[in-house]
Image (cartoon, rainbow, N blue to C red):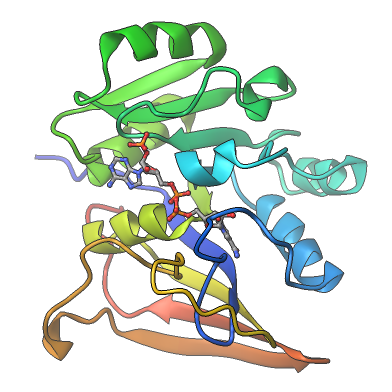
Length: 237
Ligand SMILES: NC(=O)c1ccc[n+]([C@@H]2O[C@H](COP(=O)([O-])OP(=O)(O)OC[C@H]3O[C@@H](n4cnc5c(N)ncnc54)[C@H](OP(=O)(O)O)[C@@H]3O)[C@@H](O)[C@H]2O)c1
């Protein structure tokens, strides 16, 4: 049987010194510097698709865009489409069709969802999304969804920008290849605040995902770390 094809998957987040992505409220608070936001745009300019979860996308004016002419030019020079594909994961289709992102039309928007999504919600989302992948089960079949993105939308590089639940799902599925994490000099606390990877997590150290630190740079008060995941992602050829 021919091997399936998965995109190369990067995760990029900014975390507080206590490992949070946001406060308990799960409302976005910008806490990293402009340099970190420039890194986010730089990474987007290398990706065929940028993905986030329903909670992240629903909160404010998130559009997953390439970030303006300068980055669009970089994309073209790299042989990529001028605009990245935009991907939203919403397993129960909880995201509102009135979310800000659906009012922006510069690049295709794809929704990844599951059989648990009520048909009524899906019908409304079909009108605002360019394509929808419906996975078996209540939790997204991450591998099947990534294979679909690769085959149908030609996604060879996927950048995931959180939040913690979506990142956790990708880690659990074993599809993450590298992690960009910017550690910022603040503490949020909050026992229910999202972290770099949420979801069920592990029980024993043997279940931990081993990483190799590829680069680390301190710029002013922020630490920029790049990790490679020390295992073969399933199915990539
Ligand atoms: N600091 C940073 O770099 C950064 C980056 C991104 C986000 N954030 C912050 O993080 C917070 C959001 O993170 P979050 O963890 O609460 O939410 P999230 O990961 O953005 O979205 C969670 C939603 O995604 C869907 N989902 C996630 N995993 C799934 C799976 N395995 N199967 C099916 N659906 C799945 C579900 O949608 P349904 O509800 O539709 O089922 C779930 O409710 C926000 O405050 C945001 O501002 C910070």
